[in-house]
Length: 107
Length: 122
Image 1 (cartoon, chains in turn purple, brown):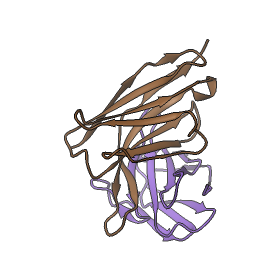
Image 2 (cartoon, one colour; image 1 turned 30 degrees about the vertical axis):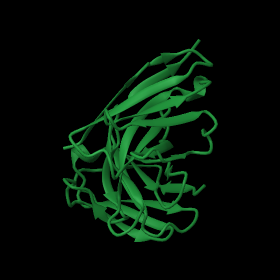
Image 3 (cartoon, one colour; image 1 turned 180 degrees about the vertical axis):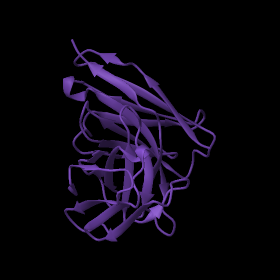
Image 4 (cartoon, chains in turn orange, cyan; image 1 turned 60 degrees about the vertical axis):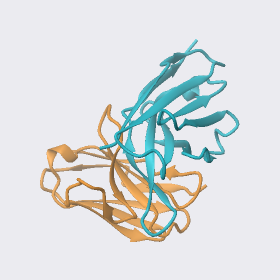
C-alpha cells in the first residue's frame, strides 16, 4: 500500500492568512492526487484532483501543486468557512489511501 | 447535478452483516466507479472498495475477505455488505462517485453522499 503523510497535523491561523499544507506519498504517484475538505459532521468535499486541477465550483483561493511524492495545498487568504480538516488521497494504485488529515482552526 | 442518497441499518450486533445502499440521482450511472469509504469516530478516512456499472470491483485487501460490493443498474444503485462486524467497524460510511481523469484511465472521487452512521454494539 502507498502510505500518505501530511504536515502539519494541525495548525492555527487567522482570517486572511496564507496557509500551506504538505502531503507526501511513500512512493511516486505521478499527479494522481486529490484534496478534500471536511467540516465537522459533514461529508468530505472534493477540492482538487490531478494534484492541481480545481473541482468545478471550488474558489480559486485554493490551489494545489506537486508531482511524484511531494504535494501541497495552499489557501491564499483564509476565510471563516475554510476552517476544516483537509485530506489528501492518492488514486495511483489500489488500495486508495488517504493522508491522516490536517486540521485548520482559528488562532 | 448528480446526488448520492444512501441508507441502511444504523445499529448492528457483533457478527451481523452490515448492509448499505447508495442511489444515484441526476446523472449517468455508467462510465464511473462507485465507491465506499468509511470514517471511524474521530479518525481519518479509509477506502473500502468500488464497483463500476459492469460489476467490475476493486477492494481494500484489509477488508476484502468480508466485503461485497454489488450493483443494480436497473435502479442506478450500488450496495455494500460487510460481514462479521465488530466494534472496530463502527464508523460513518460514505458512498462516492469516482470519475475518469481526462486523457487516462485513472479515477478520482468527486461527489460524495452524506454518510450513514453505523454502530456495532452488543
